[in-house]
Length: 350
Ligand SMILES: *Cc1c(COP(=O)(O)O)cnc(C)c1O
Image (cartoon, rainbow, N blue to C red):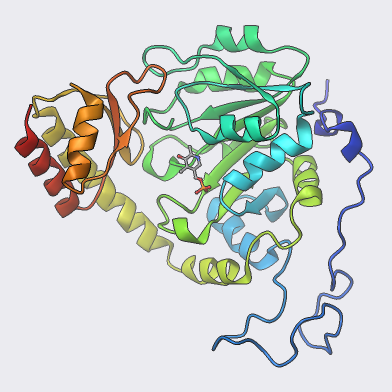
């Protein structure tokens, strides 16, 4: 049986006529451009941004495709990963009818996006060691289940979930499986991008917000089948990525080594931080991490979190999140930031 994402598509989108942008019939850069009501003189800024940007970001996708070893017709670029997440709901989930599966504790946007789109998010708790409950997922899936969201390395727990469990879901589920790899640069496992041909229902999310240090530019990636890409392209805002973002990231991608160097430094700092945290009385457990952060179990997490804020050290309180009782999430910082964190933790003591 061939998997066809078009069969999952919301009925009213099957014959959608998308917005057709100016310049779609002419790809040259020279010419008299009187088609888009732009300002012919230039911009009020020093650099000129008066022309609309490429709606399909062809140049940037070409470069990203080289770096990720994937063809450009498998790449969707969005205003952060949050954009493709939202578009997947809008494309495949009928409000009030369809549902998706999420595995708490996990990234908050899946549920928020589901809520915004009035789509039920069925919560299948992870196991105690923050792995997928595959049987629970099997039981939660019904005919109206369109997407299973899997985050690996998982936020907020930090660990990679078991590969064979992910593969089981990919093989068995006759709907879309989103694997969110926001932290892929920090883990040793290979990306699922390499397996797009094997699993036509696979969508891999990655982002420039973490390892690449470009959170403010808002650039997220979805790697998927051509069929899913077609759907996302049809329903996205025509100019969803600014010209400034496209240009800046294209230039930045000439220096991939700088990202690799920063990742290496973060991983070195991570080991030092782990040892220091484990030496603190107030920290009861540092959970295994394949990312650039740790979930820790502390005594009186909320109090600790607030005390640290009083010292201008800001962590993420996760103590109210499922399976994260007394949990705090700590991002690995620079050497001096980590030193200040540890010093402050020692000062405020018990
Ligand atoms: C940070 C993060 C993202 C990134 O979102 P952007 O919108 O690209 O900044 C995506 N998924 C997870 C799990 C994250 O932790």
